[in-house]
Length: 292
Image 1 (spheres, rainbow, N blue to C red):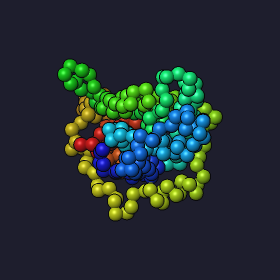
Image 2: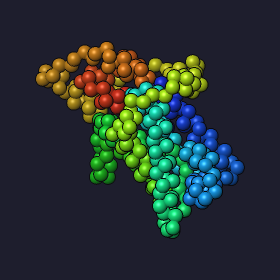
Image 3: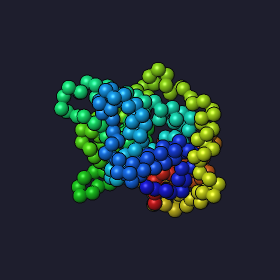
Image 4: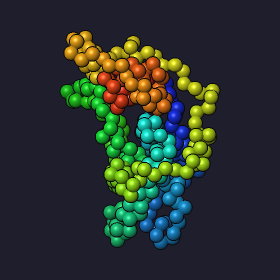
C-alpha cells in the first residue's frame, strides 16, 4: 500500500476501519476460526446469532482477501478527505447497513435452493460502494498500453476490485454487488442520507483516537515541478506554452480544500495550475505524485 506523503492524515475513520478489519482478520485466523466467519440463513434467521454480523462485516477469511481489501480501503481514504470525516462516517454506516440487509434478504430468498449457504465475510459493502464515486468522480489522468492492451491510472484499482469480487466466487460476488447497490443508493441521496451527520461526540472520538499522532506528521513532499508530467500535466503545459490558454492563479478556496485533505499547500497550488483549477484532476495529480 502506498504510505506516501500523507498516510492517514485527515482520514481517521478510514484508519479505524482498516485497523478493525486487519486486527479482527488476524485474530480469527490465529485462532483458526476464520471459517466460522460469514453469515448464513441458519445462523441469522434460524439460530438468531445476530452477533455474527459484526465480525463478518469487518474480518476477511483469507490472506489474499485481506491484502486486496485493505489496499482498497486505504486507497479510498481520498473520499473521506473530500467530504469530511463526519459525512464519510455516514457513508460507511449507510453502505455497510444497507448491503448487510440485502445480504440477509438474499439468504432468505435463496434458503430453499442449493445456490449458496454462506456469504463471504469482510467489508465488501463499504469497499464496493466506494467504487461508485471512484468511477464517477475520479478522472483518468494518464493512459498507457501493456502488451497491446489499453490501461489507465485507474485500471489497477479496478483489477484489485475484480480480484476481491471473485475471490470466493458466489460467496463474495453477492456482497460485492450489494455494495455497489448501496453506493448507488447513497449517490442518489435516498432518504436524504447525504445531508445527514454523525453526532459531534462520535466524530470527535474518531478524530481524537484514530488521527495520526504528532510524531507521525508526514514529511514535506517533493515538488510537483520535478515529477514527470502526466498526460493531464503535459496537456496543460502545452496549452500554456502555445499561448492559447494562460494559466490562471488558483483560488484560495480550492487550495484550502486540498490542504484540508492532507496535501501540502505548495503542491496543491501547483497541481491546480496544472489541472486548470479542476479540483478533481488536481486531487488525482497529487495522489499520483505520492505514489512515485
